[in-house]
Every structure is written in C-alpha cells, then in structure tokens.
Length: 99
Image (cartoon, rainbow, N blue to C red; front, side, top):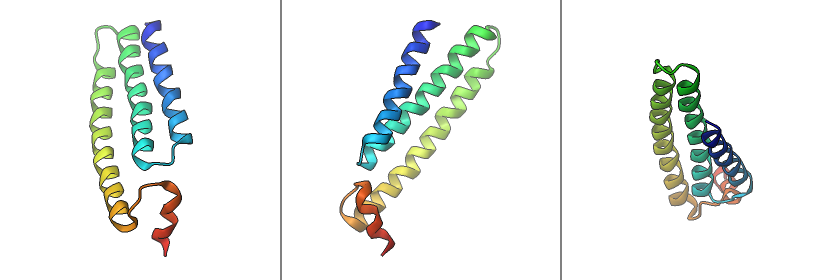
C-alpha cells in the first residue's frame, strides 16, 4: 500500500508544481489530469485496504475517470476556441479575449 501512496503523492505534487509554473494551457490541463489521477489512485488503494470485499472505491474511481474525460473534452474545446481567437494558448494572452 505504501508504494501506491508514494506514487500517488509524487503524481499529485508534480501536478501541483506543473499547474502553478506552466503558462501553456495544454500543460496546465496535463497537470490537472495528473492531480485527478493521483486522487483516483488513492480511491482505489484505500478501498482495497479498508474494505477488501467491497467496490465503492472502484466505482468512485470509474466515476472520477468519466468526469475527468468529460472535463478534458470541455477544456480542449475551450483551448481550441482560444487558439482560434487569439492564435496562442498562453495564459498571459487570455486577457486579449476580454477586449
């Protein structure tokens, strides 16, 4: 169990670091996906450890994967629309969309 939690913690903090330091919207989206995947690993690990005969954590994980896929589709649509409008997908240039 400890190894899964170490991997999950590393993924979470790498995602936080990437979310804070990146300026490209695609890189921020990938960092957000790392954070959500770390949470889903925790759901699965704690379900297996605390309730070995039940599948509630696995269902939460599957639900989280579905939500993550929908969030990615919407975020990519927004990023494509921003690219068509501005011609760049850096966060600093998004203030041009307000004009």
